[in-house]
Length: 240
Image (cartoon, rainbow, N blue to C red; front, top):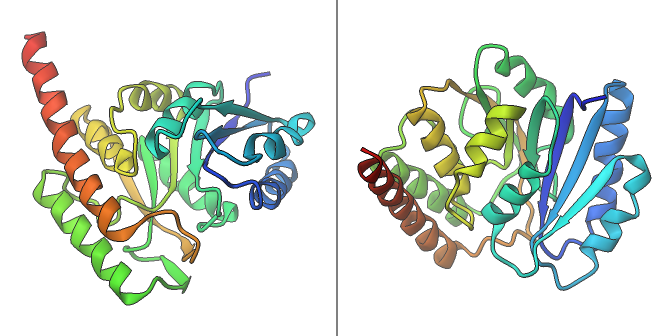
């Protein structure tokens, strides 16, 4: 039977966290009683993330492993490509947005093609906030993203996104960004195709162990945004 839902979890050096994350995700999915698949996309971890995830294989978890660390976007591409389900949820290994928030995105997907969790719209709750300097940096990045041409979305970087399965495999397969700006490229591509994007307020908790390094990664992310726009526009010109 084709799974109703696939949950894709990109992970890098998460051996100490992936087991409790999978326990929580699986408990939630098993209670729902619908067929599902869970794909852990191991981004070239140097610890035993893959082994810890494979221990859940009997409960519907599979592992896709990149041979070296390439970035979250590359892991998401590999994980989504391995799915078969009718819908695909991408969520972070730290469950900064709890898996129990999924019904909010499912409701929004009735009238949209892509539902993205957000910390910046009505309905969002943030029980554990980021330090102020990180919040200000995030707002600045989102402003730069809008200036670069990605309009109408207030929070591109919340790692909780739900899509129709066929659209997910098609859209994510076109992504060129290997690192953290993959979310921005996904939304940009969806808009270029005329797809409807719903931004949904969700619960989100800051993880002090986040692997995002503020100054280095923010600069790389914005550079990636400019690069992917140039790549896609060049591809459009050569296709004419």
